[in-house]
Length: 274
Image (tube, rainbow, N blue to C red; front, side):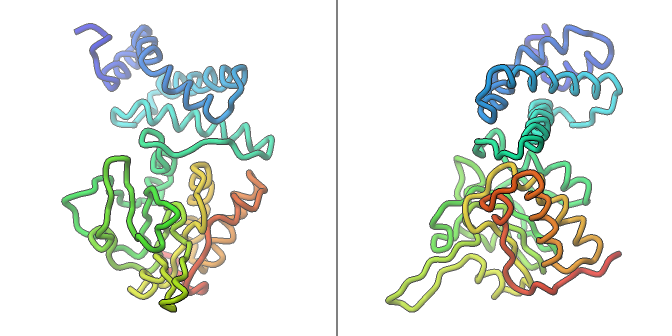
């Protein structure tokens, strides 16, 4: 079988074993998608070239030191490296890049390392599993402006989840990385306010943290590590949200970014430090 037909995982193994051409084949196979991802955030050809080059410098360094352990998911791994380099660039310039979440480049890909670090069990399928029941439950999905009344999730472009009880069970803290999931809609003549947050607070959650408006894809990778670390330290959920929002502010000091994640429910709830 020629290198053109080999899976990414095999080409990675070949490069680690010393076959330099294997990396060239990987670059050739994925360069348009990686370069397109970088350019979509920078809109600067020269800067894009620099980030693209720096990305593969890091790729080569990791593979050469044999610390690569992505289990065959080469492209998402490279995209995360590029994303982190882009964040570093904007951190220096204090600007928010223009980008959007897509089926290929989802929020989950950028928080995966954080979830693994904190030993969070992840579920990526949309069928044939029981509702998640944990002290802290985290949901990453697409949402829309009417989510307060429709109360549905869009895990990808081909699926819609209407039965939220089928995926979300009991817990104490719920983090919704879902656009507009913290919003409300008032029905004046029915004297009623529709709210996804109200649903879960009524179901026994002590606190729910969710974006009141559209959630930029670059916010969760900055916000979630700080939030989970603070919770692990036994801090109250309000302190954890404040610290996490501050982490976003340090990179993107615009109110649309650092005030996006809102806390609802009991601000004093905490989980005893283990």
